[in-house]
Image 1 (cartoon, rainbow, N blue to C red):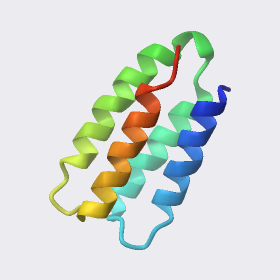
Image 2 (tube, rainbow, N blue to C red):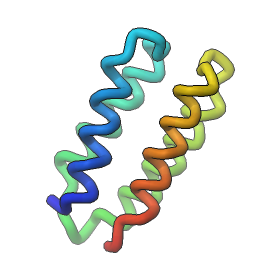
Image 3 (cartoon, rainbow, N blue to C red):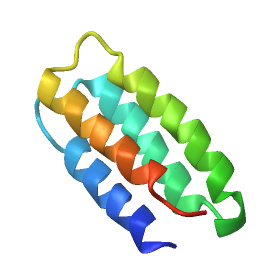
Image 4 (cartoon, rainbow, N blue to C red):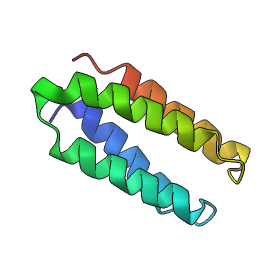
Length: 84
């Protein structure tokens, strides 16, 4: 697993454990973490594109506070920067 992917997983894990994050967002983040952990390097590019779309959907959630939304955007930026 690429170090950049591991860093993104760690950041999402911290976000998932915060008390102010809505339960449905935590569930979606858990799914994203699992998918990244199980990904093979050869399919990583396609997976990241799918996950970026998923994160965009999450960031549109009306229940998110601005700080959490910004954290999700940071995760998206981390994933976009991964060289596949």
